[in-house]
Length: 387
Image (cartoon, rainbow, N blue to C red; front, side, top):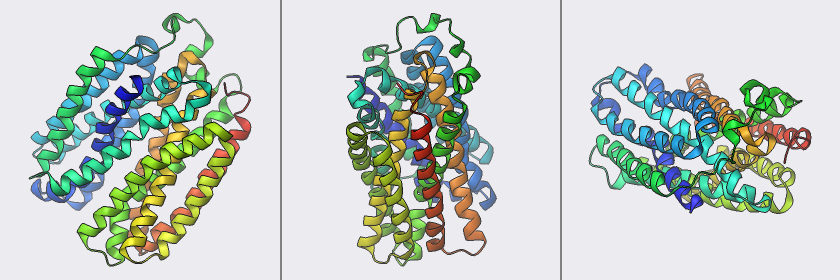
């Protein structure tokens, strides 16, 4: 039941993370926004998510997973609905920023709960089963924008009503998973900095954060630039939409299959192979032509990079003490989201410098390689701290 409820919560999270992107073609002209303001609009919820993840995880370690999760889900529902009131850049930025706070507060709770309800043999799978709902929501946002929404406000209405209903369901049905007595634990690890860097954990924390940042650069560049890449290669705008759908659907399969491999074989081999394959897919995307091949490679990219990201979510709590799972998971999510801001900025800078859309995809290959090397280092130095 916990997995099912968390899966349900993650669907609107994934939907909302991509809602601004799919609403943008109608929303930006309607509010008469300048091109210079577009990047800030896209990044507003990500800035909020960073703050929300760090504070939400800290609060969950002190007050419990359920109340913080309920409050976070209700918050991003309310502020998503409030987005329809936007009339200019300032109001739109405010509502997207506050929506991000709610989104961020929910994510470390999902990570902590996955660890607290899973057996040692199914840790990666339990986490990935929850987070596989994010690409379900992302694909739903793209399809609803294309086939169901009559205007940009409809996208945010759906993104607000569903979380509010789920917040009530979670408050009613979700049990508390935080370990008994955790709130009263008088351990040095209760200090956030000590939890992250004390007792020799600094190398593990820094390697984990670097892995999240590098992986998120690839994730968010692909999310933002796959349709642009497809159009640059001669596909029409409606056909290019299917690159995003393929990316998200591939991510669902990757989340489950890579998690099964990690649970069976340990993280080192499957994740090294996954990042190696991701490098090959980035290079192949740079040279690919034709609708079928581009969509297939988009799905393969989603399979690999989203699957690897969700396995990292599942690994994160294993490196830290039980009483700080929310805090440490929130820090990893928050710091990692720096990559989600850098990804689109890097893509935009490369295009502005005259690099082709294919060149942008090719430029992601070394980033994927660096992420894989960092994860390999993490599995080597983190063994002494993992449970």
